[in-house]
Length: 258
Image 1 (cartoon, one colour):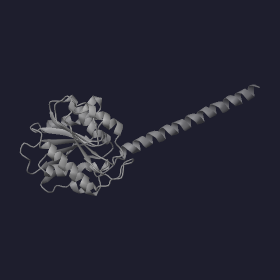
Image 2 (cartoon, helix red, strand yellow):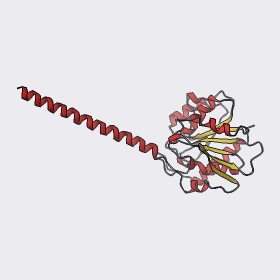
Image 3 (cartoon, one colour):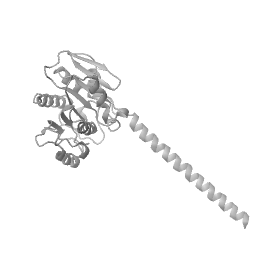
Image 4 (cartoon, helix red, strand yellow):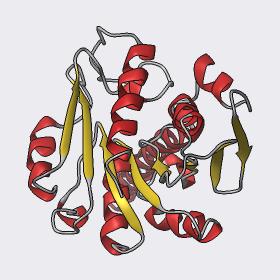
């Protein structure tokens, strides 16, 4: 009887050991998947890679924490632009947008976020603003980047002169409703990534005079150049057309800011 009990206890211990090994393996696999997602962000495609080159009156340079698009002929009294990328999207993916804005005379800077997630270091703008103390900035971003930009603006209401959102919206912590600065929101009708319920709720955190612009047939990913994003809708306008409308709307809005 004692031998049988010892045998049963041994089997039970081996069973527990096997279960723990399986559990550990599942944890390792899960962590590996998360790490793979973090270290495999959406990256720049052909147009973005080309826009990373100095050309067309725009000097492009890589800094430690940002990418700098500086116009050879800055617009008189033109505002500089500080841009936060979308979640898990490499900053170079927004080079076409930044290059076009700089070509129009606006110094444009794309932040390089740790692990390509603005939520990890939303205060990165501190370093950029400190590097250009004589310039007046507006700030904005795409998707998660726009939400984190809004939180930064709320924490620094006296240093940013305008806020813009590309397929993005502020939350309660990023409410810019009462800051007295201009706001712009651009959204594509075929966006399959943005949470429309939260987007509509986010309107309550924007000023009543916010400028809204809709890109008919535009989607989420075409605000950058990083290929198709999982869950996104199919666009019925070209990436070039969506970029053109975005740039034109941003420039018109910038012209209204004193």
